[in-house]
Amino acid sequence: MARELAPVGSRSGPEKGRCGDPTSPLATGAVSRQRGFTLIEIMVVVVIIGVLGAIVVPQFMSRPDQAKVTAARIDIQAIATALEMYRLDNAHYPSTQQGLEALVKRPSGLPTARGWNPEGYLKSMPVDPWNAPYQYLNPGVRSTDGTYDLYSLGADGVAGGEGFAAEIGNWGH
Image (cartoon, rainbow, N blue to C red; front, side):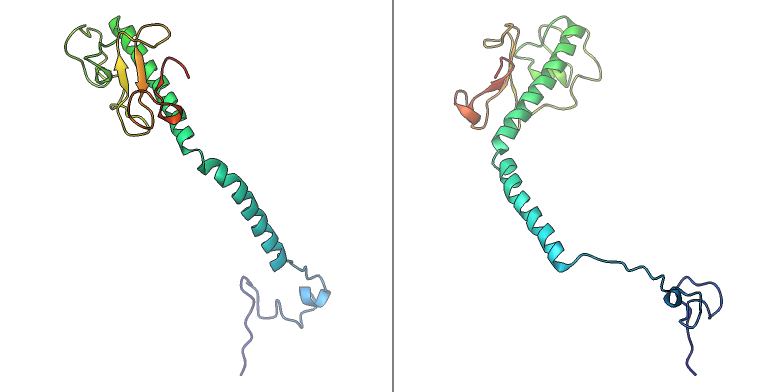
């Protein structure tokens, strides 16, 4: 004996949803047709995405050096802010000998950091996007206000250079 099953989700008796039921959607003609995407439509969308990717991705991929220079400038601004907070607490910037490490742990030597914040000014010693430490000189030689020089040696890691190999510092672009 064949047994008829009710559609999934049906809670009433076996008559509901059957073709012989005069109120079923099949009998009344009220079936809504769901239409999916054709293979051609999907292929057109994939081609469009591919073309956009071919145009956009090289724009970003060809600029990793420029991105590193921008990251170094942002880091220098953040370190300069920490140096300014240090100066406000201690009435002076750290000496060249104390260096940027004075922003992470209490410095020794002169000038004494009497108002040093026990929490520090930075969580860790900063490194530039090329994994080299940032350079710090006090008094500065190239800074616009003459207080200190804060800089990265750039992509090549040595003083001098042009383009992406040039120093990036608080003295400007």
